[in-house]
Image (cartoon, rainbow, N blue to C red):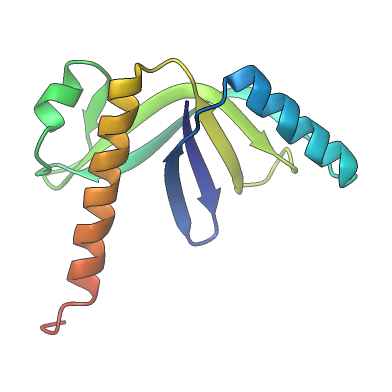
Length: 126
């Protein structure tokens, strides 16, 4: 299962080994123990990847990639939004409808894009 964590500072992707049902049960139990609201709803999520990453052609054969501009493609996924606030912009999005190889490729491409962004930000020329 692919998990996207949305925070004030950006998003973070990771692969979760548990099934969606097991993971949701753990999250709901934790929310109950902490006396926090547990909001879950069907939703869609998206994130951007640089259009020049290697391997995007193969990925585009398996999931929808939309062109944003000359530099970025948008990856759109269907899944569930989990948050402690129904109106909040911070939370977790989970998608369990993807093949494990597609999840791994998305994670790898996202990590590459984060590395290239960090290198551009920390370049001595900037």
